[in-house]
Image 1 (cartoon, chains in turn red, blue):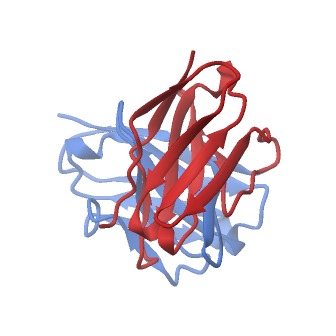
Image 2 (tube, rainbow over the protein chains, first blue to last red; image 1 turned 90 degrees about the vertical axis):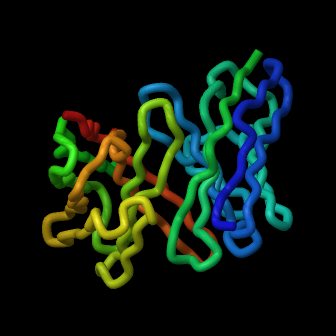
Length: 108
Length: 121
């Protein structure tokens, strides 16, 4: 099906590692990109491609992919990382784009 | 510095039309595909529409196909979204986003701050 599935919510203890996953058939053909969004703000790109970060994004953010699943890993989570995270990909046809439902990350 | 500034959001009655604009600066606008993404109150991101650098390829989400029209004017560094037959389900913040695509890698590297569209009687 043409959709991306994310867990609605994940929590992590301060300084620990957390993985946020995104599942979808299109991820066998296209890499996911990942966006962080804080309340009242526009999304910002944090990871794209195989495992690339825009300038200014801390290296504690990393990406990976296997089969139909893409993952965003935060190694050593900080309070500032508490936010909603969305994955995005083209659909299998390449003619449409879609976002996952989003994962709310709580840093305890 | 890349800047994307949306405008045109408003309170509009159901069934009416509205056109959004996005003015770009800080990059060569006609080198990039551009997209609209929306977010209903308390909901997640939803891709709405995208247009290639030369307007040769255009796509729409099923939820807006036949009602919304995306266009761009490269001479004015501007992206547009004409929205017709609006319903309450179209109420959202609308973001424009610059898209980069290389093979099977694609991403929205810059986003505007959004413009709010409220559809209500």
